[in-house]
Length: 478
Image 1 (cartoon, rainbow, N blue to C red):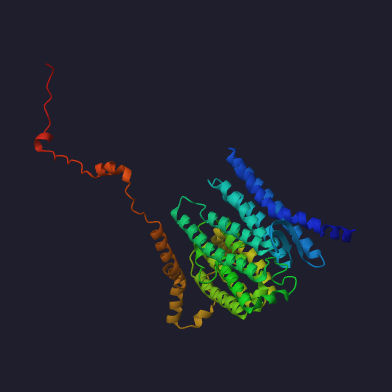
Image 2 (image 1 turned 45 degrees about the vertical axis):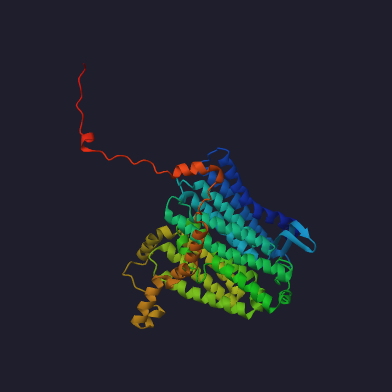
């Protein structure tokens, strides 16, 4: 009986229904909130959290069941084309689903953390003016994450990638009345745009070299030898494009500093994006295109080097931060750098479990960051009190002058932000100002007299004299 039920639930129709629920329910909840608000119905906070939490929780339960029942299948993968958008000759663009152990693991991670965060945010953002806006964007973020992870092709992954980045940047500017948050959101969005361009180049290159973009047929997910027909040059070009996209999304060297600006948003959004979902999107992308990384030594070395530089610089900068959220953000970037090192070394299974454990840990740490000092005091009291004893670190073996230099470099994040501003931000800002500079108007021939009349200098007023400023005597009635 149990075997019959298991085989029925892991059949293709059941998985199809679960996949559609996971992909569509978060967007449906956000759409309901938007339509009610546009129609003039002002929902109280309790009902906003109920609508959003119900839709997200139902999608999370469907995602967990989808991941579980997919693992029960003999082949441990599920690929289905839902809809063919268009077909031109031999080329076709499909809306499809692909679930394997990697995407099942990420789906389970998102399904576990998103409902918890919604429940936490319902109380944390009480009486905030943007309460409805926050939950709408949480639904958009959940939709983007599930489409990115469960998408059967790189085209669908790009769609989810865009939704995830857009909702992240908008939530950084949640407190839009402060100029600092708007500027920080612009910096985050600009960094994401660079990553989006790199991913789009990878999508176009994948269509050019392989003629298809399905994960199940192009990158050797089903057959490890299938990706070899791309050749060394094609694999290198595509692998480097995907690496640049992962660098921007996962805050890798040298763009790590943008996660500190992203901390201007509410703590729940920081926990969701820069502790769990968005910060690991680049790692998932590299794990998904791992056949390209394995086939190109250049890409493997680049992935290893970028990850190692990020792990060193971000961890040193995190240790000199004075704020809790900034420390956690840089620590998360350092850990994703270690995941890139593991991918570069070929330890993909270790990278998968590292990603899963790190996402759960960072979520708890971010959500407890407002009470960090209180937690530390309670732990010290539980251990019997006593004075604080600093732990031993390897840099204590270095000479004092070198140690002080490293400390100063870590405080300034090794000058990477200033370098990027000087090399990219200022030239682009100058070009934007040059393009938007107002141009002189051409004189219209038909209105020459009117223009000439405007050029006539108006008569100058006479300066007041002492006599004119002297007060006049008021005469009585005659």
